[in-house]
Image (cartoon, rainbow, N blue to C red; front, side, top):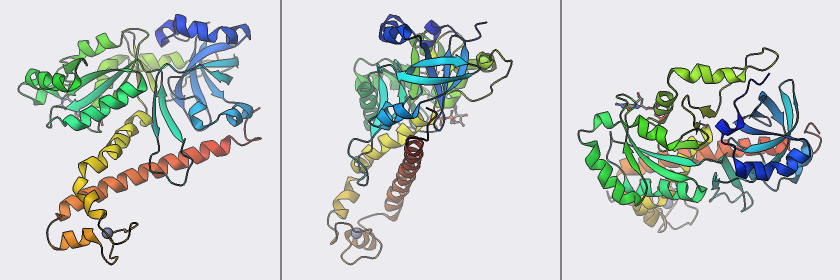
Length: 352
Ligand code: GDP
Ligand code: ZN
């Protein structure tokens, strides 16, 4: 009958069991969120995977979307039946990756976006194909510590660096006590060290700029078993669910969160660092006549003056603008997602 993974391999333990006790007494079933859709969640339970909803009442009570389930959350389900269930509670998170929308004047100050919960180990990645950016690495480490998860630094694409050990020992100086491993998905170097950080029941996640090789690394860890792990989605009715999972079970035990939200954290980190990285531009902009200057032909624009007399290189201005636009598009995407979640949260829109 049981076609699902056992709870322990999903990360369940004594602490969760204690937190769940009142829900068990109420006859509810525990499960862990593997994918967040719009207004629906896929949840692993011992009896298999179910598609769950949150009753309108609970959405209404949620002080912010931060209280609604996210990938990695442990939830209490009512009557999982025929692949359907209702989430009645989210267990208090041990760790969470979130981001407060800093410069977002239109919304309330407390807006918080949680992208993944209950991650134990976060792999902060940087590529050995480029020079390691110490400040960026520090920002990632800060984000990792703030989440409550344990950071581990992975220097990817070690096959492209003649002396990965030398770089690793340099990076160790930045990270303090944080373990550092040079890895290569291409040669397999360091993969065992990565696996050792995510034994059965431990949840990991990857953080880092796009292009450093995070997906390739996850695929290397999952290996040929990716399809096999997908088969846990087969439910009693024989229906084969082929949905993508954002909580990936590794063949040797261990779990990896691989979701767009974790990927977007990269841009948030970049956003925080935008001011730092472009101090010259911030200083110039402060001298524009109008505080809301768009630097597009307004009188007294210090940016345009600096561009005209060569104090500001056009390429530098362009890369600032590109990054800013990328961040603005991300903001907009998050806004849309938030609005659509809020809309579904209106009384009457829910299933209960
Ligand atoms: P992500 O954006 O961080 O998920 O990066 P991807 O996994 O998509 O990888 C970006 C690029 O780096 C791809 O072209 C990969 O083939 C390449 N890549 C990934 N891992 C390695 C590696 O270990 N060595 C080398 N040489 N290239 C790699
Ligand atoms: Zn200006």
